[in-house]
Image 1 (tube, rainbow, N blue to C red):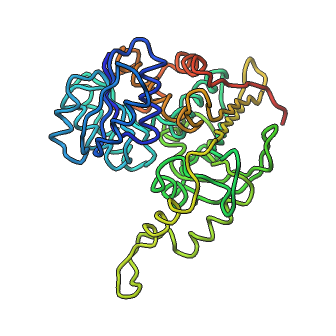
Image 2 (image 1 turned 45 degrees about the vertical axis):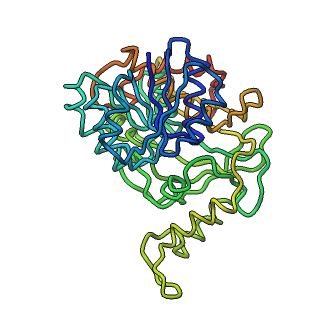
Length: 383
């Protein structure tokens, strides 16, 4: 099979690595970027005859269609606002398509292409990174362990191994995506009803063995399509982001000051958007590409064989010194690669534009994660 990877950033690198080195059925990988030098750098780093680079600006629809043709599946590792047009290009070229998602409105527009995707006999599956992404399939995997599932609680965070003030955080993906998660509302299920709650609220503490104090708080996008999938079936569903203790209050202060606003202000007779300035400052002052952890916890409450139980899934992944891949690259790009290959091989349950938790075989997916040494620690907990 031949796979097309759009975007030669961190996640594009991770996807290409997985396709080239962990995926024997993949025959060829094309990595595309507007900056051809970045795409070529990935080819040099991956060191596989399977991989080739092309120059492509994904905002040019006609060139994208031309470049996408002939591939069995495409993975978008570019900013989320390109994903709707890329989905349309996939329909035109008959190419299965998945992306790293992260924006509910874009995902809704992509899922509205369901009939067109069915006619093209392809899959379009948004939100295939970490969260939303891997955790959506894990949510279905855990829910399937019960006769009746009542609650699903998801906690996920990417953390530096050596946190540094002021935010004890490093940039592990797009700064635009980070700000988006912090300022848009979060969709949850409460008392069986879908509702929205403000991000950066409902702060809680949590503990992982051998980690310092951690916190989790509401953020946007993590539940993606899960509230719709589980609507009418469970009572409680939520997603919170994990950070080192104190991060939420620090960042929320910047939000409250208006530094995440997209409304223009005038400073020294120049119109500026505070959000753009903050984004530039975060990129300038926060570390990136240092050794990291990804922490994942899903807790399920439900009934099995007449007994009410609470089940916990924990994953702790860390920077891989052997491959020089960060934990965030492994847990974001590898799931997208797995799903792209499942689509290309015809292993997805249905054609069309579909949420992954409905379309992906959760058992096969978890087995593929384990093959890449991304392993679930499972336990029954009290309470």
